[in-house]
Image (cartoon, rainbow, N blue to C red; front, side, top):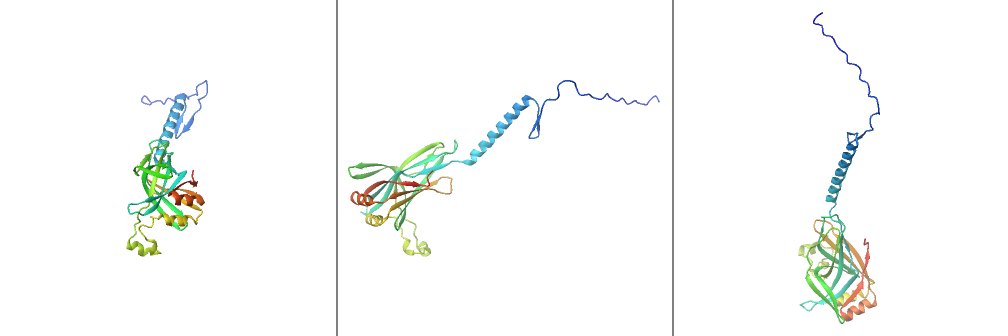
Length: 252
């Protein structure tokens, strides 16, 4: 028939002669064939790992650690109302091992004092310098205690003087207390005679330094213990101060 079309069958394709196809691998669904592809894949993996590290670092934040004072000063301070009160001073060290850009800010420091039946708190009062004037201890405030930064990868030390403060002790709190007699606003203000009497019957003084950081809910505690011997009580009674090594517990 004149209008009939003929179907032409193409010749079968044959594999080219020569070297076989190069090796290939699959990465995240992509086919990697040439050396250029391998370099691109390496750059891709490097960028992904960099992003992962940056995200992880961002969520890690600062890593502050507090170290207890090697030496703690126990001294008696006479207030304006002529009442003599036991106080503490010591140099605390703060280290931040967090990544760059994640500074820690020390908000405040409290020290808990336990000796015998005494259990009281003192809060930081000032950044001070400590010196001796013959047999007298001189604790000179440099400035009032305030929040300060600890940069990432650095350390900061502060000589801190502590002082008792009045507790919140309303009638409502006293009513809920197991023993209303314990709800005394100025119970932290321990006189020199009361402290000496208690210390003379004890073997050690336990100090717990508790640090609060800006942006962190939980406090960080470090404990150290001061041995109490005859010299502690005698020198404290005679000179109104005594310095002693404080042995840290559970420090890093």
